[in-house]
Image (cartoon, rainbow, N blue to C red; front, side, top):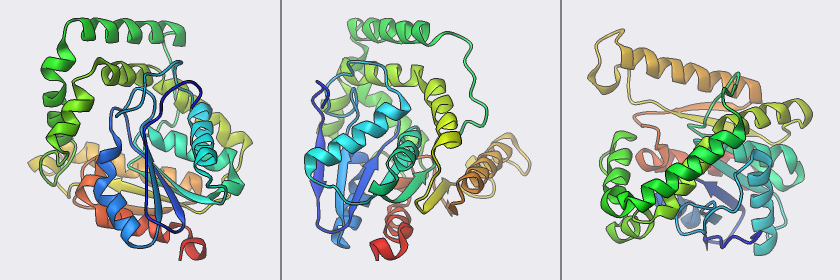
Length: 288
């Protein structure tokens, strides 16, 4: 699409759900959720954004509206013209919400999964400079052979640190196939360099494009005293602040708010059953 080979997986039959993962994640991070949804009578669409998973490298820096249009274009190519439930995890929550606002007639429901939240996004350096630095760093990292040497290990360590339910469940061969390449590292660096811009873009969309679809916000929480911290300790306060910000986001969107517990940031790995249930219930009668 738009000159970039896009990796897409479609399974199941029934009302359509689109699952989009966070920064540097891949389609297989939705395996457990996708299996539950497909088994319960849903068509599940998973795709890798440019520079992620098995998709080709990004031709241009991402934008919030651009990613929303990518979802719409993907659905067009697949022949899914009716309303869909769109699910965004982490930074992809920006894209999912933007889709729901820009394409209200194509949105049955919106589910944000431990989504990124920026109440007052600001940038210090110009976008072009940040993009240039990200591209240069990506090339340097690749030239140094770091993806081949450390990519899978870095992926495993990051996933383990981002969940409460155990290690990375992804198949070893898939992790090696994706994370030994400089393409994924460059894609993640490029997307991350535009994070504040995408946050600001979404904030502007909220002022011009109302959200009409029913929405659900799910926040991961690993317990009253996360990571073994003492009462009132840093981790506990930080975790509770995150829950408060997620609850505030739900208020802004007029959304249902759920806490997935125990769960880390990768809620789809720690609580796939709860995520699948929320997706099934998100659209009310539309997805009954």
